[in-house]
Length: 167
Ligand SMILES: Cc1cc2nc3c(=O)[nH]c(=O)nc-3n(C[C@H](O)[C@H](O)[C@H](O)COP(=O)(O)O)c2cc1C
Image 1 (cartoon, rainbow, N blue to C red):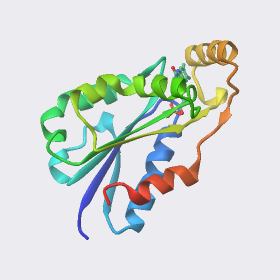
Image 2: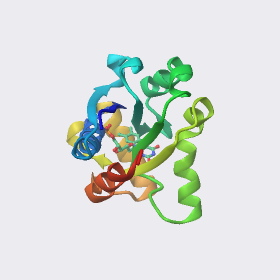
Image 3: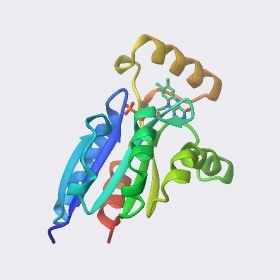
């Protein structure tokens, strides 16, 4: 299998790049050629047969550079297998309210491109990796939602998804 897959991502504090890399490892084990490149580097989609696009959430939204990437590449992305992943800390429950709230994070990008698959991963919130503004905001959100700081990434879930995506 010689298919080349792009995993492109947007991060602020660095945990989403580790998720992107983990997805890349699993896809490489399946025999795909994989590149993991930040959206900020504007990867050229012409080099790939499929794209996985991921972003961290800030204040209810994908990071602006990830949304921009989808807008700018709408025509190309609409013609190839595409999957989205989102790393976040709130609305991680199995109940309907939680599910709808996290799905709303990607409403804007799904209106631009309909992905073949989409998944939401619990992320990491580590105050020591945040700048002053983000740390202040994060503390306020943690207090109002009773959400603790910590690393909640589920590596089995992340690798499990990557082992079946684009099967
Ligand atoms: C300032 C700030 C705002 C955030 N807003 C949300 C939010 O609205 N919803 C949510 O589920 N997670 C929110 N998060 C959690 C992040 O999306 C999560 O920690 C993510 O894993 C961070 O990824 P990164 O390390 O790649 O930046 C917020 C985090 C910070 C620091």
